[in-house]
Length: 141
Image 1 (cartoon, helix red, strand yellow):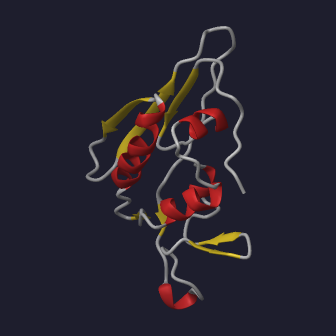
Image 2 (image 1 turned 180 degrees about the vertical axis):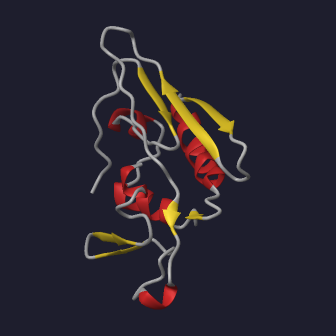
């Protein structure tokens, strides 16, 4: 399944712990075409169990993916070690209203013995992505 998001024409403003929104045209032009399942799998492989969270790892990952696509990136530290706020902004032409997407990247810790798959492997099987955060909330990033 190809990554299909709404075309980013208006001023897009992402003030979030974490978010990803990229137009298909931009992805193709930058040769960064990944399926949404592949992207989610990569995010799951970054362990952000809280505590401690370590959301900085996700912020750095997203920054490395979004900067080459023209996004302005800010990673704002917080008083808590390993935690930050991630802001990605893609300027539009000003003809339409801005969009804001907010999300979080930390996940609840796991009891590995209760899992039938590695919760941090981001396994893709039969069109589904398995792992901690696939639904709450890395799937929303």
